[in-house]
Amino acid sequence: MKIDLSTKLTSVAVAALLSVPGLAMAQATKAPTTMPQAAAPPPGVAAEAPTRPNGKTMEQRVDRRINELHAQLKITPAEQKQWDNFAAVMRDNAKAMDEAFMQRAQQFPQMNAVQNMQSYEQLAEAHAQHLQKLVPAFQDLYNAMPDQQKQVADQVFRIHGENHAERAHRRASE
Image (cartoon, rainbow, N blue to C red):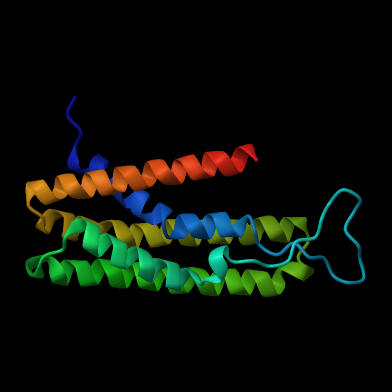
């Protein structure tokens, strides 16, 4: 069966983003759920303090992922311009998501349930907009790679996507 390049690139980009905004979306489900001090949580509902995975900002996690990808993909000097553009988009997206999560965290104690869902919707929309920026940046990089390096990229993103899906499945079954 032949897979067209846009389908393959979409899969690769989604896998890449699973390491960035995917963490962001996972973080959204761990947004602070403390209630205003005047009201106690209903019985059986535990209030949760704001947390960040590993205590790091999204920007710090993205920088780590950028360094990992650079090494795994064996970026050459000829590809550096496309790589720099891709990495810049990843960093910009991470910074924007960090800011969005911080804003949500600050407003969370005053949100009612509908506002909470609206806030989550805004995060999901931002995630989609970031994907729309990241896919073309990655596609430019991918197009600059020779076929053998594209195969390495395909494998790196496939394995990362599978690992992310496995972790998400484990979290869901807890």
